[in-house]
Image (tube, helix red, strand yellow):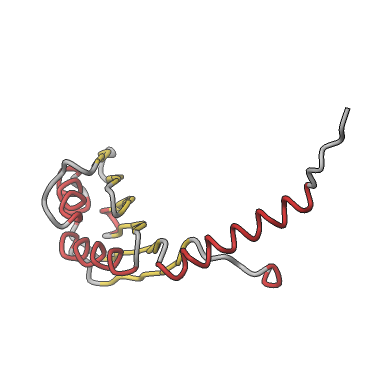
Length: 147
């Protein structure tokens, strides 16, 4: 019986080389942007109603077509909403606390421009007085020295 010439170490190095190549390509092309958004002092009536949140999520795709996207919302009792939007260019998750005028939103988009367009539409729909945004670039390779 012949021994295999497979080397886990060599295979691991080759896999790392492939990952680095793909990651550097992704970083150059803007693999994805993840915005963590906090909106404060939005009107209670907007944040408390599942249908209003559903409409806001539906309008984020820009062209008004719902053929390519999925929107789901859940109404909490006595108030509050969780919702998701899944489309070809963005994924959005929202949780609202109307009693605090607060909404927590995750926007995950192919690129930075798309993520910020979604953010602008959500601001128009939810009408916050204040917001805080944390931007994370996904798909970037971390050097081994940084870990």
